[in-house]
Image (cartoon, rainbow, N blue to C red; front, side, top):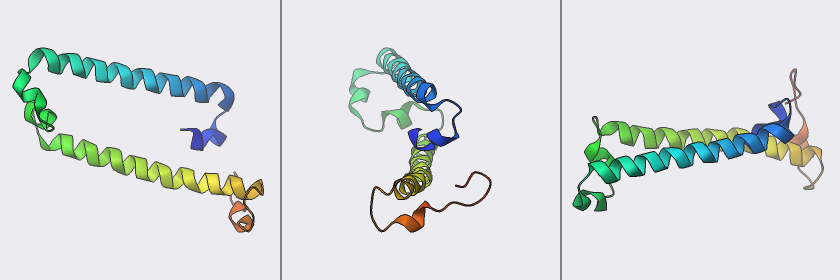
Amino acid sequence: GANMSGDLKDPAKAIPKGTILAILFAFGTYMIEMFVMAFTTEYSALNSYSIMQQVSFFAPIITIGVYCAALSSAISGMSGGARVIQALARDKIIPFIGIFGKGQGKGDE
């Protein structure tokens, strides 16, 4: 997301476009899932928190997906957080963290 904006060719255009497209895609996906579940599942079953596992072809895939999503968010937070700290240090926004502003390699990251 926005933490990786330094890698984009035109962040001013790409970030709003990517954010809006991500929101629309997620909204569409959830709406489709809502209607599929509403029209194909009995009302009494819809009160269960584990309804997705009950109606899936392979129940463990739902749990695996939840863990993969959590892991992806954690990794993104770690890599993005490092870039944010580096930018704060380079801009001297927080005193005494200047050591974290130093980069290395081709892109000085």
